Image 1: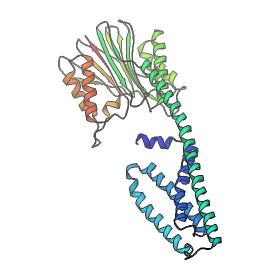
Image 2: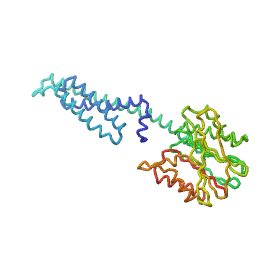
Image 3: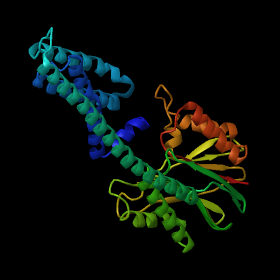
Image 4: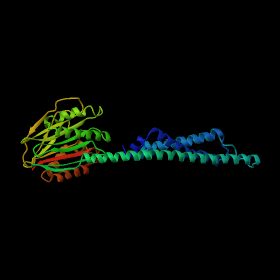
Length: 381
């Protein structure tokens, strides 16, 4: 759906109705002009129906433009044919009075009064139309700038909550970025802890806009609170699920994955999230680390399994959201996991920011972004 189409669909019905009334008033003057052309000889019923037809069909034309956009002409042409036919029928059924070869004083006075009425009707219709347009523009302008300010504030909060990650903890380095598909995203990347005990995680809240962004902020707050309390990473997803379930809307959930320092090894966990990819610098192979847990927030409680793995120097872990995989080209072909893995193999030995750039640029060349795109890379130095 185009942004302009979405905008018109978001306008309150009252404002849309008043706007269409303005369209009616402005273009009803075509019916009045018809009477002026006929020198005030149209029957009263013809006059009224002509004004109503001109204003009503202008509303139909406007609605066709809103709904059909570039294809509006497909509907406008047949509608114009109907409009033209109705005007011809009106002219034949209620024809204008014959033109008098000579006009006496009373006829001249009647013509003067009729044309004066037409002139005042045009002024009244134009004034009403302008007033209706002005009301809508002021009302919707205020609403737009209020919403725009709120979205700008929400976007600023999003940048604060989900900053770019570029850091080292002990023998591990981290790089991550989250690019929302709109002003506010529902993705979260974060690294918390010390050199001996850290957790790097990524969450993807369902939906788009402010509501998922708020839930995303709650997920980060809860995760930081749990991690600062010394809770073991094995219980992280279960605890987050308990916190998230009563706070979000019924149809919302969050997929989640993490990698945590666990003694000499690592612990990984996934909840309804795409597989974590492990790239080996020695062999160039990629291993998928998957989990069968359901997403967070669907059920009030549950067990979330995690697993321990070993890592070697040079190995890199990629935590990502499906916004990368679902980017589609003009033919509807998604970027997909195969291309994603190919980028990791080709650039996996480069610096982490170079790996990120190669994937982001490859996805951008493939197709447009329709969902939040977040990537968190972890490498053992």
